[in-house]
Length: 358
Image (cartoon, rainbow, N blue to C red; front, side):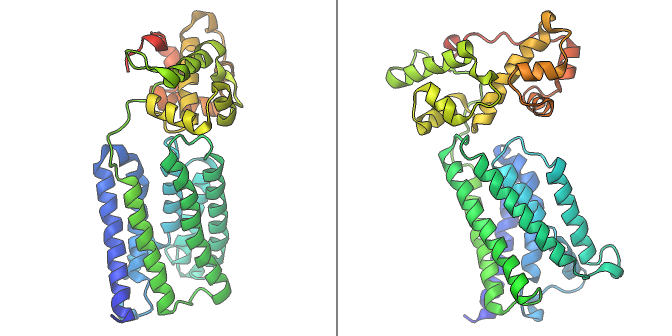
C-alpha cells in the first residue's frame, strides 16, 4: 500500500467515523446534549480531512472544496466547546468562553476570504495560533481544576487523556506551523495528522456512547435503600445525612471535596463512589448545587424571608455569587429564582433522607 492509498483510507475513515458518531450521539437521549457540540465539530473536522492532503488530485474541487476549507477553520472552537461540555453538564458558551469562540470564528472567516479579499491571508493565521494556544491553556486549567470533584473514576482519568491527546496534537500542529511555516505539509506529516484524528474519534466513540443503564435521577441528599444498608455503607449514609441535615456543610461556599471527604470519614475514592452511585451525581459541584438550591427554594417560599434580596438568599444558601446561584437554580428548577418566588410556589415537601425510597 503506497502513501496515497493510506492517505485516502485514513481521511475517509476518519470523516465517516466522526459523522457516524455525531448521528449516534444525537439519537441517544443521554448524549443528546453533547451532540449539540459534537455535530458541528464533526462536520468541521470532516471538512479538514477532505482537504488535508499534499496531493491536489485527491482533494475536493469546486464549491465543496471551498466549503470544506471554510468549515475546517472553525474546528478548533467547536472542539474546545465540546471538550468543556464533556466534563461539565452545566456548560454553556458564555462570557469570555463565548467571546473567544466568536473571535476565532470571525478571524478564521476573514482569513479564508469570507469577509472579502482585502484581508484574506494577511497573517491572520498567526493570530489564530496565539488564540488557539490560549484556548488550550484554558481547557487544561479547567479540566485539571475540576478533576478533584469529579465523582466518576473513568471521567477523572479521561480528563488527563483529553489534555494529553488533544492539547498534544494541537500544540504539535501549532509548533510545526511556527517552525516550518503554514504551508509545510509533507505526505508523512499529513497522514500522521489524519491518523491521529481517526484514533481520537475512535476513542471518543468508546468513551461517549452509553454502554450501561443510566443512574437514577440525582437527589440532593442521601437516599438509602430499604431496608437500610449494613456495615460501612450504613455508616456513610448516616454520616452524610448528619452532614447535610445537621451540620449543613453545603452552606459553606468554599467547601472542597477533599475537606468534605475528611469530614465524612472516608477515603476520597470511597466518598466519590458513594455519592455517585447512591445519589446519581457525577460531580461534587452538582451535589452541592442540588443541596444549595433546595435550601434556596425553602427560603424563597418562606414568608419570613419575603423581604430578602436574591443576593442574600444566594449567599445564605451557600452560593459564592448571584450569577452562580441563578445558573444552578435555573438548571435544577427550570426557571430563575425570581420567577419561582413570584409564583408563590411552596417548597417541595421532601421527607427526611432516612424515609426516602431508593
